[in-house]
Image (cartoon, rainbow, N blue to C red; front, side, top):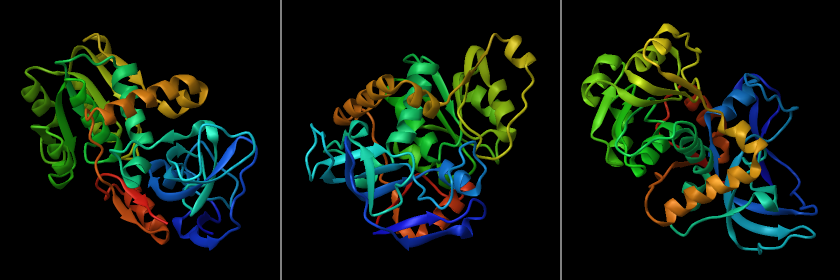
Length: 323
C-alpha cells in the first residue's frame, strides 16, 4: 500500500510517499481503508521534532481518519466489513490503510462525507471541550474566537453559535473570515488591520465573556484585555509560534480566569468521558445543530506541502489527504 513516511524528524523534506506492506488486524483491531485523513497543525510539528511527542522515525504521520472497515481481527464485534467509520489513530493515518482499535471507532453520520468526518474529531472535540466543559459557556454570552479562519477556530465558531452565544470571529485577513461568515457570524475583526481590544469591546458592548485563543503570540494580551470582569480566557494553542507572556495584573484586577485547554491529554486519560463528548457532538451533527465545513482535498503526495502551509498559517479551514 502507499503511505506517507517521515523518514527522520526535522525538515519536511524528509516526508515522502513509499510502498509499505498492507497492515493486518490483531485481536480487537480492525483494518480501515482510508478514504480521507485529516491534516492538523500538530502533524507538522511532530514531523519537525518540535512537539513533546517524538515518535521513532521512520513513521507514518497523521492521527485522524474516515473510511470503510476492510477486515476484522479476532474478537471484534459490533462492526462489520464495509461500515463507514471515523477514528483517531495516534499515527498512521496518512496511508491507504491503517490498523485501529475497534473500540476507538465511531460511525460516520449520514450527514457527513468521508472528508468532513476525517476533519471533524480533533477540531470539534477541542472546541466542544473548550466551550462546554472548560469555559461552561452560557446562552447569550459573548465569545471572541481568534484564528477563526483555521480548523479549530471555525469549529469553535460553529459550536459557540450552536450554544446560543454571540460570536466575534477574528482572523488575520478578510479572506480567512469568509468561512466564519458563511456559518452566520456577523461580527468580525481583522486583527492585523484593526485594534483587537478596542474593536472587541465595541462589538460586545464593553467586553467579551469568553476568549478562545488557539493562536497565541502578540494577539493574546489584547484579547485578554478585551475580556469583561469575571470573563474566561481559554488557552488552546500557539499556532502563531510564540507563547504569549501576559500581565497577570489583568487577570487579578478584573477577576478574570485563565483556562488551560488540552483536549488530547484529557481524552487519553478519560477515554469514557471522551467517548461521551464525541457522542454529544455526533448527536448535534445528526440534529443539524452544527455544520462542519467541507475541507479541501489533496493527495498523499501533497502531505509535506499541506503541513508546511498549516505551519505558515497560509491554509484556510481544514485539509484532508485522499489516498
